[in-house]
Length: 60
Image 1 (tube, helix red, strand yellow):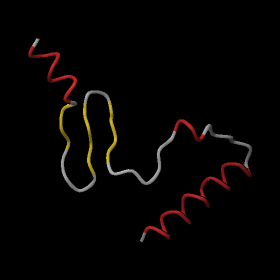
Image 2 (cartoon, rainbow, N blue to C red; image 1 turned 45 degrees about the horizontal axis):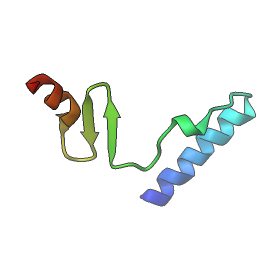
Image 3 (spheres, rainbow, N blue to C red; image 1 turned 135 degrees about the vertical axis):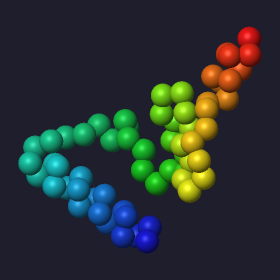
């Protein structure tokens, strides 16, 4: 469930902090439905598709 996921993320972040590893949380995304990776867009439970900006560049 969503609550379990959030609890686990907090647990991992606390453990990392406890061992002295600090993360810049502004660089990470949590609980998102869509992630852009390289030239692709990955959607939860759907598929991987090419970024529309890349498609426009190919047609030009």
